[in-house]
Amino acid sequence: MEQGLAPLGPDGNPINLHHMTQRDISSIAEVEQSFHQSNSKTIHINPNSVPSGIDRKSFNKWRSDYWKNRAKDFK
Figure 1 (cartoon, rainbow, N blue to C red):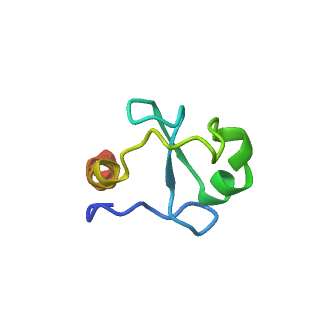
Figure 2: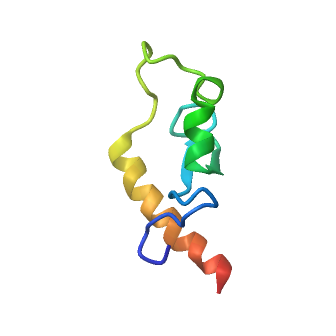
């Protein structure tokens, strides 16, 4: 996490950060990748026919910073 990468969850995959309302300004939840994939239709309120409200470039930077800051919780 100190390098900006997600920790591995109990399922052995990186923890995913899920936008609760599929918009940049929405709350974020840390979820296991297996949960994120197996519950995709339930947790993604926008169908694929609607463009994402998430700016992926800025989110990728934010995500890296998030994990770096989150690592401080374990020191």
